[in-house]
Every structure is written in structure tokens, then in C-alpha cells.
Image (cartoon, rainbow, N blue to C red; front, side):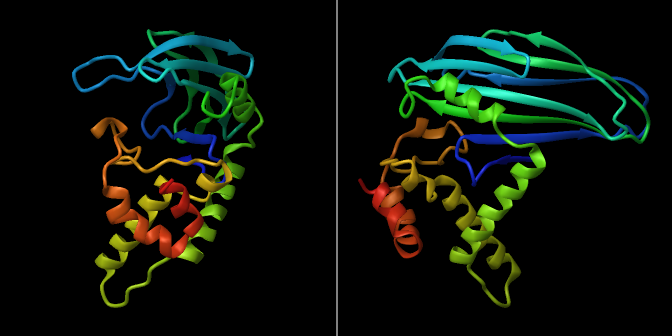
Amino acid sequence: VRLVSMANPHIGAIAYSVIPENYSGEIRLTSMLDGAATYGDGLRQTDVTDRARADDYIALEVRTRQSGITIAEAAWHQFVSRDGESEARVRLIEPEGAIGLEYSFAVELGRCYTLEKVVGLDTSLRESHPAASAIAHAVGAPDFARLEREHVSAWRAYWVDADIRIAGDRFVQTMARFFVFQLLQAASLHNVSMGLSASIPAKTMSGPGYNGHVFWDTEIYMLPFFSQQYREVASQLSI
């Protein structure tokens, strides 16, 4: 299970579970923070400026080559076995442009083993020390179960406002909700609370296509929805 929190715009998390069905022995799970970003032709967009590991987190900081924006990530991990007896050996990994942890542990047939990862994120657009802020968000976050409950609760409030119900056609109903979901992932009330005066790039943040460039998509396709449902968000998108 993974999520990008709709309750806290600085948090993403994943809970990765393994239940061996035909195997008992050792398993290795690798968790990475990868700061490498390239254009389609392979030209690098970022340079790593710092990497760090402490007892309870790893952190990575990069700077964009063109705009000079610093982006920081930090990850807090928790390894959990259902029986509470298994322990993992942890090894630091530092490939170029990244930092990670490798977890090695013994498993038994039919038992559940889970690695929880909570990532904090911040940038120099908002913080003078984005790495310290990202670390504070990751280390200070609750466990995955609570993050998931908060995320679900935030989405429930949005659906009360913006759900579209269509009778008689389940496919059209699903697509309508999918479109609303995509719009609210691209811009939410956090745009207002964080004072973001930015438009939505083509393909939003779902991939490298268009390199984040903004065209007329926002005004033609997206603003009508936000103007109807969230006027305060619409005003931030049009600044």
C-alpha cells in the first residue's frame, strides 16, 4: 500500500508486505531515495548536494541545474514482522545520485513481514533549510496506519464536496470520479494553505512529459471544475 498524503502535503508513505507462499529463507528489500532526474535525451536535471544517514532516517538533497532550486527528501523506516520475533540486518547503499537501505531478514512460510517507509519532502521555495524540514516531517510523522487513516479522512471530505453521481452507466460513473481524483491530486486546498501561486503543468506530476511546462490546459480544461467547486484554488491557479 502506498500513498501521497492528502492530509499533509509534505508526506508520502509505503507499507510493503511479504508473505512467503512457497519459501522459507532470507529475503532482501531495498529502499531508495533517488535524486537523479534526466531529460529524454539523458541530460541531467539535478546535482546531488548532500546525503546523510542517522539512526532513524536517511536523507538526500539535490539542486536543479537550471533554476537552482534545492529539493530535499528524508525517509524513516520501520520493519515489522507479525510474530514480532524477526529482526532485519540493515546495510547502507550509496549509488550515484541516490541513497538507500538494504534490509536482509529470515522469513518463514506463511508469515507476514512489512517494511514501512515514510518520506518527508520540502524545497528551498518554502524553506531556507529544506533538508532539516524534510527530516522533521519524516521523523515526526505517525506510523503508516495513522497516515492512511488521515489520508482517507481528507479524501472523504473532498468527495463530499466534489463527487459526481451518474445513474445507469457504471463506466461513465467511474471515469467521472477518476477525472475528479486526478484534478484534486494536481491542485487541492493545500495550494491555498501553502500560498502556492502556480498553474498545473501538462501531465501534472505523473511523468516527465512536457518537462513541467504550462500550456492552456489549465484554463480550458481544469479551471471550470475548480471555479465551480473550489474558487479559492482556482484563484491560486490563475495568478
